[in-house]
Image (cartoon, rainbow, N blue to C red):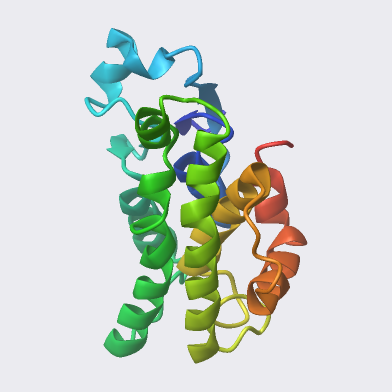
Length: 205
């Protein structure tokens, strides 16, 4: 074992992102599951790892890191993943594309947020997810027009936008949110679904 440990929950979008990036970097890692349904993230043991009580938590290079976007930035900087271009304008545009999901959409679809808003009742919870996911996936699709999918979101290698998109696609399918009119997203999904790093990171693997 490499000594790299990921505290993870399979269906967590944030954890899913980090698994993809670790796979892209070719880093061997041990997964330690934090069962969110069993409230393991609220235990004193996990809160000692991350006071926010979130996953993922990554132990790597003698450091303990939290927050998926910060972890992705670290892996990009230390492993040369090329997740974002160096040109400041293009970097800002691609970061905005990724944040449209990771910052704007993901938080309102967090299970704790949706559960609080809907008291965890159905069909209210599913309707909540669909209400937010479908239009914001459509907005992401429109934003993709500014980039060339060749075949990934912004070019011929996976980038930050792809890493945040695929977990959101998983959630869209999970909750039955309609993104059938998003042809650009569909083409990116096809490319990512065939990539070994994405395959190995999939929650149902």
